[in-house]
Image 1: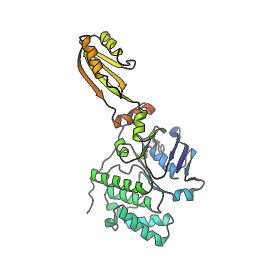
Image 2: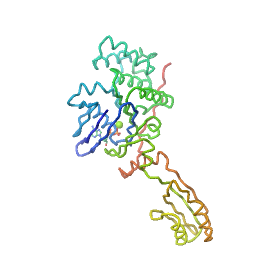
Image 3: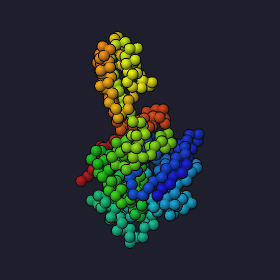
Length: 329
Ligand code: ADP
Ligand code: MG
């Protein structure tokens, strides 16, 4: 189990993390989700002992990542956002080097390197220079090095950024396989990316953890409401009076143009009020010219969660999907 308690990280006068706490249970795939600059890499760097927090603690199976660094780090494999791959080495040389650095016994190392190369499907390219590999293959080499030493927890920082669609599917599939036998934590700024892969999500925005739970739990957190868009031909006062008799209009937005009134309001998801509205308007000879219910999409849920915390949109994307480099078969 991982226990992160009250992490803060301050750069100058900028708080990258302000009191992040959460627990991670064994054997699940977790998604650390948040817009760019939210603090995902900072959190992961601190959790893996690569960066010192300003305050707070991280315990991996009870071992403090700083006080008992050797025991704690042995339990974690980490693929940072910028994997430290040595371009002039071949994947096999590099993995042997990492195994040695992790203290894997030399005889065991040969076998382990062979195993992780098999699992990440890089055996075919084990003798090529890393500099000549595609982004997808490099990412697999990065995941392979995280697996060396057989850690219980694998932490991957935005492992799918910059991959083309085919590589994306392959890497995602590999992460899913990893999750069958250990705890995996993956970060991403794309909700759909983690929502289908992860059992549980941790949503972070502006250095604060704003939600943790399954996708269903997060959807419930943002309220059991849908949005109703209604346009009626009639006078505003009369139309609102009819509406008021059916739904709560305290939080609605209205706009009028010529002889129509347009209203947008939140309505309970479990009750379809459209028939009532239609007939009540007709009784008063107001014509309903448009009526539509908008269900909150996944992306909306994420935006609502992160907007509430930051007051700005969550999709300031600097995604660079460089799929230009061809993989040599
Ligand atoms: P994410 O991985 O979610 O995109 P980061 O953890 O990289 O976010 O960054 C969180 C915040 O901390 C950002 O505002 C970023 O600019 C800031 N930050 C990260 N690293 C440094 C650093 N070395 N010096 C100053 N500010 C930093
Ligand atoms: Mg990052």
